[in-house]
Amino acid sequence: MSSDSPLHLSRWLLTALGTRIFVSYQDRVPAQGACLLVSNHRSFMDAPMLMTAVERPIRFACHHYMGQVPVMRDIVNSLGAFPLEEPTRRQQSFFQQASGLLQSRQVVGVFPEGGPPMVSFTQPNTMGDFQRGFAHLAIRAPVRDLAVLPVAIASIEESNNSAVPLRVLSFFDPSEPLFDQPGWHPMVVYRRASILIGRPWWITRSQREQYQGKQAKTVVADLTHYCHEEIASLLRHGCY
Image (cartoon, rainbow, N blue to C red; front, top):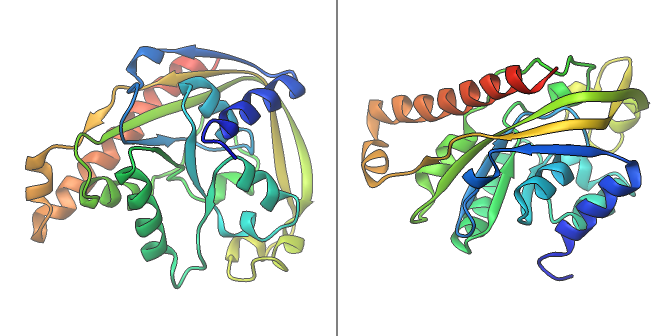
């Protein structure tokens, strides 16, 4: 599979589903080099829509169960995603895989809200708290000229369906407590959506030097807060 195959597949998928996307501030996307893309997350369509919008293949970190479920596993592999490991090895494995991809000057995509917005029906203009793993990765990864790019996916028109009972997924990933509850895994299909590119945050040598002791927590919190607020602001303008 060529490096552009996930991008071609993403475009084909949106065409097949009849999804229209409108991209704002596309000039903010770094044309080349390492980039850590950070976005809100509600649908299986988020990855292909983001790839189509930024016009670069993106290696997304995805939930562990997506690498276990038949058919879904084939889809995420075709899109170039890398499923996370089980909880005991998740943090170390994520850093190793993502860091290696960034060092090879690729785009790595992360959804720092984690699994909750994917297993419950949420409103298009809402967003949960961000986990801070991506910020630790950005500052620790031995990569020069690294851009952290916040991107908002703002739904304009969508349909909501029930895909599969959550407890069925627990057979494939018993380590995930989110599946140990009644109800169905939702499937959001966008009809029309805006992809709004935020202002990139460039990782500096000074930030890396501050990443030690008590200062490390502050540097990570600043980057996490910036991305959350940038996406939230774009989301408010994009959902209408």
